[in-house]
Image (tube, rainbow, N blue to C red; front, top):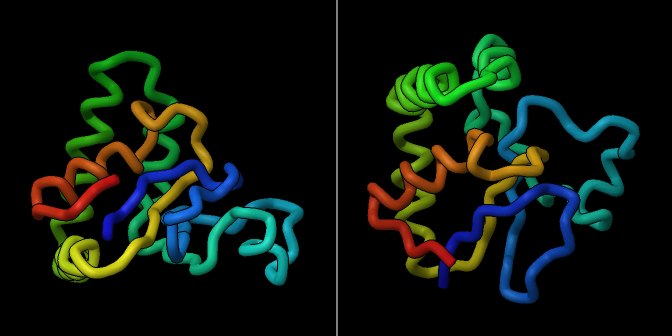
Length: 128
């Protein structure tokens, strides 16, 4: 059992399990009834996405210095009690269930999902 970090909208892996969309907004132009069928997500969970101000900061990051400032700020948001408990829960669930977390960004290295991956690893999550 494990958690996968994926790009939303990409084809699903056969053992991916439940796909959780950790994005601030649903995909544009996709009817709610099609989000799972079209490989976006099964459950929308914006609580694990950056705040709107941080999304702007991430999109504007042109170099490593700006990106690292985003990472520090997002880690601070994820250290708040509710997101911290969610990450603890997901790390524990990864030992017994297959599921995935995702975002729309093309490049994981410049996406908040890379930070989520690191936070889950730090909690001992089983990652695929």
